[in-house]
Length: 461
Figure 1 (cartoon, rainbow, N blue to C red):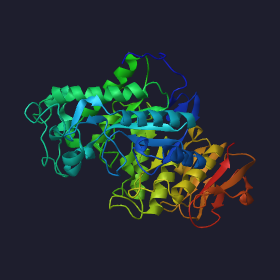
Figure 2 (figure 1 turned 180 degrees about the horizontal axis):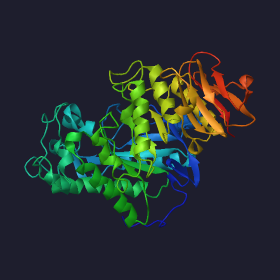
Figure 3 (figure 1 turned 90 degrees about the vertical axis):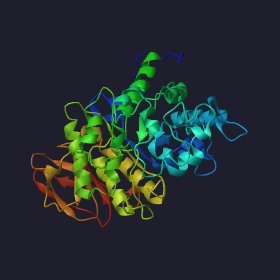
Figure 4 (figure 1 turned 180 degrees about the vertical axis):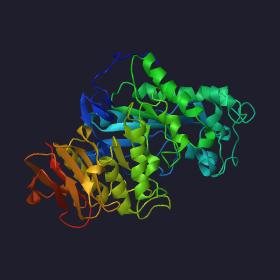
């Protein structure tokens, strides 16, 4: 890590100085919205076209997993593969890193923000480990099952927890009697250093250590690598933002405190698991509000690099309709980023996702959410899961209807009249013919124009 950058870059993505629940970039607040057809976009052959497709609908945020699951036929591994079919972890595959470099350059050009995931727990189980993982000692020429704690093919079925790969770091010597693994750790460090050599020159990148780390693997893994990334960046004269994604779907669970209680390690909170179908609509909202309240003394952005759900998805994923609601509900509830997960576990960037992103972007351009906060207390005659409100009282209100209907909005202390604009989520656009004004100074009944998902932008810019 010989390159050095400015000690502090005021233009980099970082918590917004006036409301640290949100992000800023180039010293201006920004809401991150996204959806894409896969997670490791740097590997896809039509990267530029897909990025342009995102920009067209107002998307500005991608998840970029670094794993090599080799699920689609176009992916390559980060390491050179020898004629025997085994990888050499000391030699890099130029094609992989050229693709990564291209993605970083093309996203910066479009101001699309990249949330990198360094490791993926699911890439180390069952078939992934046996047939595709370069880290498997049977699949590389650099170490064996005898000089590491890793086991070879057939050793880690899907339900196998924990996985020895995640016990390499020094602190793991105190967990479940497992010893650290310095041989494997050396190669893990070299790999992370290689990622950072490409990504640190860019100021539009966020870092997550893992995808869905299981509690049984403990706190040490995420702590070690978040510190490692931050320290490497500081050695290069740079600050970066880091987080970890734990598998637990209940944001109130003690496991999530590993992140919530450590702002010096995890500078934003990754809440993707809140979108899982195990959480009811009410629990989904309560979880997000719990996190906001828990962090209120030291706010941090709350990111969602995945919003699960599609009619074709697995049991833990919601229906199309509920996925849309969880996306918009979270935006109104104070999320700093939202992104639809890849198909079929999510909507990706299908027609529905495009309409949602487009309408939410337009509505939040009118009502700047970083000047608001969730205010359900201002709603009257409210049925469960019918409507959600973010408000800067007297100035701006974003009122989300999940399926038409009506609700009372308390404008008792607000003088004069406020403009009202309607954004149809299902159509992905504002309906200019519905523009009107509200007479304030009382509790005003707001009636959605029709069934389906709508955002009423009241006041604002």
